[in-house]
Image 1: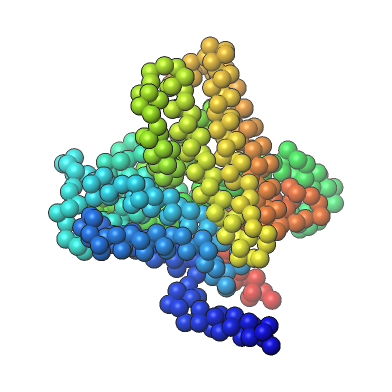
Image 2: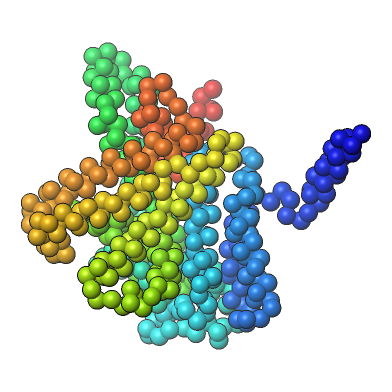
Length: 449
């Protein structure tokens, strides 16, 4: 009888839980609410009860996003991974924009005359829009905290800008479509090729480890580029071409490229510091800078070589560590949604390995007496640098990120781990948000049945 009573009490508690206002809210909704509350917080006076309450609710939503269930209807690992990374990004951005700074005192928009805008003078509605823009801005373009390493590009007229955007968008779709088709063709072992000799040659050429490593790494690079470009390119086109959105977004200068040209990628440091996107640079560096500010003055201001080296590599390792944590939220979200063993994949190891690569690269240059700060290195330096950087990126991208993540997300293939990782990459490219090729392909498939 006592046992039955306990069961009834537990059942009653479960029923009561369903009456709570937050029951049934997904992590995507909590993430959305956290952004709205972050934008709403500066509308209240700093130090007021309403301000503290809004901030507490915002923190609650950020935390709840990591415990609330993902949308039950979503089963795509690529979409779940992206939404998980977004959860990590919003948490990191909230830490920088709200938790360690008073936003209206720290962050300022720059007007056309170069003067800082005082957010305190704005109306409540204007403050909300200001706060929303602050949470959505990634690189600080048009603000007084513009991140370093943003690719420089020659001045363009509006017409030239719009033509370039349209061309890049078209090429992006071609590249993304080819990535999907090539990956699927390799996975199907060129089943559509009727000539047996040619088919055997193509299978042998693409099924070896070197080819698979290169294809997976390049495919993921194209996928990452597409995640930003497939939405940012048309958004820039609309804002500049039709003068919509915040005023700072209506200028050509507000839309520099997300990625620099590859001719700068002759070192691991330059690959990540100059060529790769800068979307996470501010939020990834903020925690390390915050910790460094509380270290003893003798460390923060030391001009000794050990002191300078410590500060330099502490910030580098800190930034890559936070980037790894943010990306790990993606696999964490996938494994929770699909009832797999909870895992963060290989993101953290991959990004920390990039730090080790930068450290090793700097050490080798120091031992060889090479000044790697030169803007015009020798041809030999560039050639060796391109080769070493490409080899290191491809190897680490597949061995420490591609394979571990595909395993954590339940991908398997009888032909081995590399084919499972290739399948994962193909699904990721296919499911990029805004990939119209996917919708057209699915429509064609359903119509032909």
